[in-house]
Image (tube, rainbow, N blue to C red; front, side, top):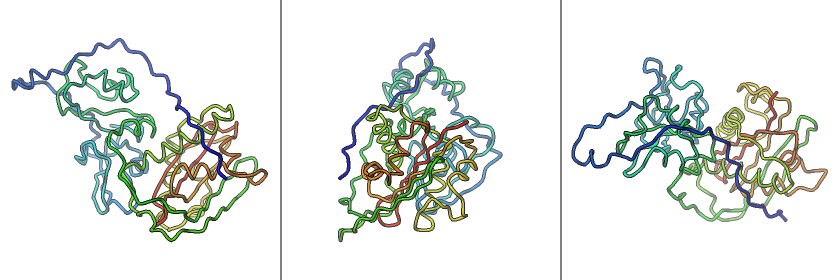
Amino acid sequence: MSTPLPTTTLPVPPTPTSAVAEGPLNVAALAHGAEVALPEAPTPEAEAATLYTVQAGDTLLGIAMAFDVPMAALQLVNDLGTTTLIRVDQILEIPVGEGWAGASSFWVVHQVEAGETLGEIAALNGLSLVELLAANSGLDADRLAIGQVLVLPLRGPQDVLAKASTPAPTTAPEPEIAVLAESETAEQAADATLTAVPSTEAPLPAALPADVVGLSAEVFRLVNAQRAAYGLPPLAWSDTLARAAQRHADDCFARGWCSHTGSDGSTYKQRIIREGYDPVRWSECWAWYGSAERAVAMWMDEIPPNDPHRRTILNEALTEIGVAVVPGNGFGYYFIADFGTPR
């Protein structure tokens, strides 16, 4: 039986304080047709760009990670507004250059609504005024307009999940599916395969739901909940590890099956190094399952000494994690979790 997963509250990284004053939205001026100066949203260098055709299984986050640009850059240059939804065969312009240097892939667009102040926008998204102003060059904290475009410098999937205000689409009842998962640490290599008999119920649709970022965030939360239950410190989110996990997840989807080995023969250590991660320790867990809860429960529901997933999650020497999720070719999702400790 799977051990019930405890709940926990994700740690909130400290944010710098700010002495910047804020002012209310000038709704009255707008209502009377007054001209309000709108600061320009940050834009990447227009002269350097390439085109990408969206493939089955792609997500805006995955594309942003692959091209090392924030989602906000893709939203702005492609007139996507605040949506992160994309469709197969859609052609996206990929901005490149120094305009977004240092930005996280999780940065997204926000449009100002009536009654909002800059301080409220920052607070609702777990940001400080200093962070919000730094990501929006030329922004006047005292002059906001309805519909004005801001860039939210979110730090990771938990921030994106917290920002989401629309409920996730409903899906068919989750079937019991074949489960394949593996894990290995730098100190001791081990593989495990668990198999459940598939049910006769219809499988989940292969199309990626809009809340896929939420699935990554849920794995992140559940893994840290397990560590908290054993008195261990939480793992920090790593964009680099998440980027490596996303590339491998996309590779698994493209070939229709998954393992630790990439289609190019790469190991997960090679993949995280290829993304620029310099590890002292490293590990990877992957699972083909119908929900984040069941994937993490399966990783933890192991009996020593055949417990590679459990040892990875509860490894005191590992300090960071990155997670990616893609459709599982007809059954649930591929969950890829890359762990590491940087030098």
